[in-house]
Length: 210
Image (tube, rainbow, N blue to C red):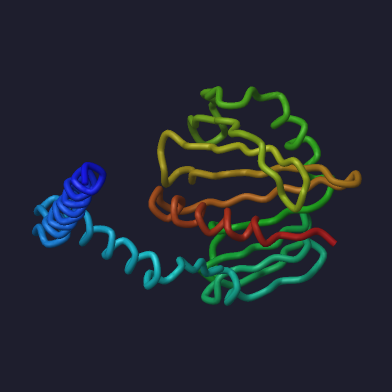
């Protein structure tokens, strides 16, 4: 009798614990979520939607639709609305938006540019030099070297004191297999020069030697 008496309360205790646990579990399941939890859930849904629906960025090569030049000066691309002209003595290729005049982009090849190349080597990088030319004063600045079709090139920028008498010019010099090259860009105004410089950099990125 004593043994049965002890077992009955124990059974009742276990049943009570089970009922209490079920009640607590049901309370937390049915309890409304706080605004913070709802915001977090919403943010996660939006993030998941964006990560699955956002298109991947695409890059376009502007020069892919440009015209091509292939000749003794090398291979290069230039804008559809621009024109090319070859001059002799010295050998120069003009790449211009205007069909007349001398401003725009130019490529020179031959020993005519040897002394200019050697002179450019003497200037320190990023150190401006004030000089006086035949037509006025200007500031010369050697910029950091660049690579043109895998060849190291010297970069010089000339800014005249008076635009109109002289034009601002960016010059690129290099020597390859004993041949000297000069590539430069200019503009009749500072605004035109800045625009042409951007095109010049893109043209150089397409340039290939034979």
